[in-house]
Length: 108
Length: 122
Image 1 (cartoon, rainbow over the protein chains, first blue to last red):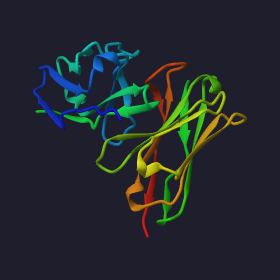
Image 2 (cartoon, chains in turn green, cyan):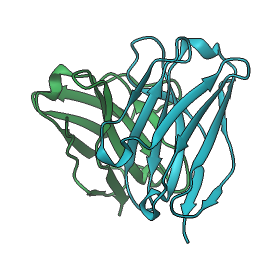
Image 3 (spheres, rainbow over the protein chains, first blue to last red):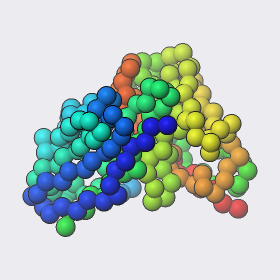
């Protein structure tokens, strides 16, 4: 099975930049999607296909994917960005959707 | 607008089964796949299964914990997808979400249900 590895937590000061990584074997050959989940709420798609922002997602959210690591970048972090973030791919070899374990972003 | 509305919370005893529904509206039901994703308390997201409402094709997670226990079906007359999990154990306690994928060959989930809490306890 395909494994996605995320850091458990990232801390960032307001106004600074948060980088959340998602590691996987040759992940650059896959499309990576990112979700934000606030406490008590369903996940929300914030980045699709490595770097596309769905309608309504602020430009502060961006993504990249290269080699064995995909990255979600949140610029000018705000208190409201405090949430869990999950990366996700489609693993065609096994016809499975795969999620990373999630990264808790804390705004300090 | 697109909506996925799930059935209410359930309390089940170990060994029982639970069937959760996901009623969709606001789009053509047969054009978008629907997955089931669960989240145990304090844990991450876990993909369980996907169904193509058009032809009924299903992909199930190959994780041992789901083997032989999960069944996903759909009713095209009511635009509803169902997930049944049998032989429940305490570690099946979780919020269960249905999620729509974004269309043919699309690989992410653009709309989610509100979640259904399934608690398993004797």
